[in-house]
Amino acid sequence: MPEDPLKALSDQASEAHAKIQQAHQQINPVVAIRRGLRDSGIPADVMTIDCLRTRRRIMLVLHDKELGILLYQFLSLDENPGDDFQRKSLSEVNTDTLFSWMQSYFSDETQNKQSGTRP
Image 1 (spheres, rainbow, N blue to C red):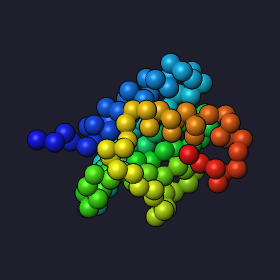
Image 2 (cartoon, one colour; image 1 turned 120 degrees about the vertical axis):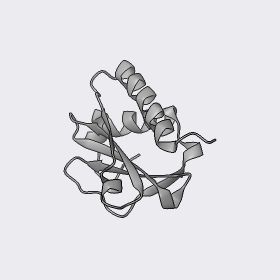
Image 3 (cartoon, helix red, strand yellow; image 1 turned 60 degrees about the vertical axis):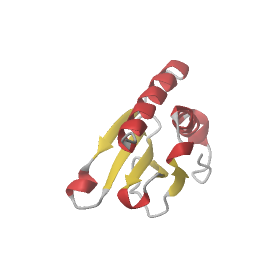
Image 4 (cartoon, rainbow, N blue to C red; image 1 turned 45 degrees about the vertical axis):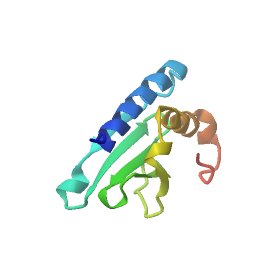
C-alpha cells in the first residue's frame, strides 16, 4: 500500500526543518498542518511553513483531485493565497527541495529582493 502523501510530506518537512536550523540559526521556520479545508468540504490538506522573522510563508497543498501533485505558493504572512499555485510532482519533492525553498525564500537576501523573484 502506498504511503500517505501527507505523512511523507510532513516527514520531509520535519527533516528539512532540522537541516535549516543547523545551517541557518537565524531561520527558525514554523511548520503547521491545517485540515480546515476538509472540515469545510474541500478535499485537500494544507501545510504551511512560516518564517516569523521575514514574515514569509510557503504554502503546500495536497488536493484529492490532483493525486501525486503538490500545489505550492510563496507568500508573505499578510497575503491571502491566490489561485495561481505552482505544481510539482510529489516524486520530485523531497527533503532537499523543501530545504532549498526555505533557505532561499526565508533568507535575508530574498527579503531584500523585489517580491517578484521567488524560488
